[in-house]
Length: 279
Image (cartoon, rainbow, N blue to C red; front, side):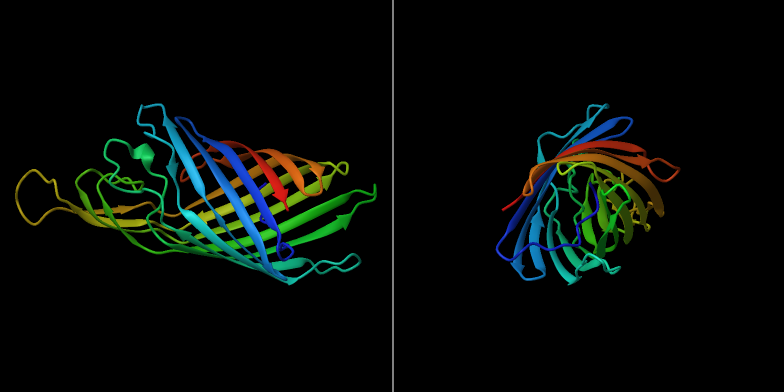
């Protein structure tokens, strides 16, 4: 459900895989769609983009005013090695991804739910791997293990933003780097039915915001400085799923991601459905 494949598409072939999901927490629902549009450019190299849209529903009434665009991600993956039956060596690929700050993130006014972007360019480097095991009952178990690191840039921020700033704020934000580790297993029940499970770990470094409140009412200068730090956080998650394939090129996935809450992370439950089509 979550782990990217280490395989690449044959040259001239497309993969279309839209996800629909609801990130549900105690007081909010983040409805969204994330669509993978990938193309086999040459042998061992796949490129593509991932458009994202969303709508936030909040119990306090500050929901999104409309469906909005999130940041758009560009992606390229190059396969270094390929698994062969009888070999212990897995398929390994390196992946480069760039997030373009397309979504709204500041100047949100009284609609903080309209914030779907980050405002910064972010580069992600990943190593993806997968291998296969033939079990005693004749079934196949596929395992993926992926590690990625994201390096965001910085951005100016004005007013109400996704970073918790108020209406009079003027300043800058520098999101922290993040690490994501995903191990997944897929067990083939039949030629059409597959059970899947992802186990994930995420570590986010401190996000720092600094600026001034230009709506300071006292009238004295200089304007008061504002410093906001999120602190680092980490989260563990599980994502069981069921996959069904009508043909080798067309299938559907039903799953749920569960992020375990802790003192630095909000617990969420995210049901999702996706269609996978290769042509």
